[in-house]
Length: 273
Image (cartoon, rainbow, N blue to C red; front, side, top):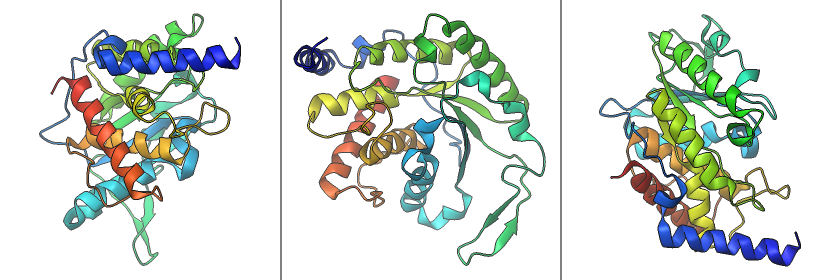
């Protein structure tokens, strides 16, 4: 396909998003729409390079949470276990909950080591499959099987499973609807919350196509893309609006406000608030 035609179809997909909203891109409605009233404070993110780009989405999330609730900043804790290019089946999720391993120690504000003793290692486990796996003809069954297996493992350790809906490639906007549907169906099948990051990417591109959310490979996120995804995760996990949050991750203030707004609107629309 020529670059001219590709640009046309990207613009057409964006226009469709603006006209129809999330209903057109996620035909199945999510059954789980909140983790409240006891919102999680700690999370492990299990996935791939989409999480670890730009110094890691979980780190940005922690800083947003602490900025929103400075009086209780010590209770927020996020970490990640990532393998580049990985799908669900690459991860030994059971091992991530073993005693005296992940989260065993941390460092305080004065760089002193603190050996942690937790009643529960994590409140939630946020998992993401590889960028094509949920919709690839040969890998969709693996996605379905491991969504169930991993959800059961997470629950056995006292945490809640959460699925992270990833975004379309910059030059394949048709992936947005496909990924939204696959993740929503998996979330419903496993009574799990789904974080609609992919829908937020589509919404932001439709409104400001000049804003680049992608790295040069058209797959991984730029800093703005990671910040947008972090805002969506913040809204989904805390139930709070990211609009006005003082942590901007190095993104200029007008752009950060735009991304915060898109994230909040997407979460509200997807969950039917």
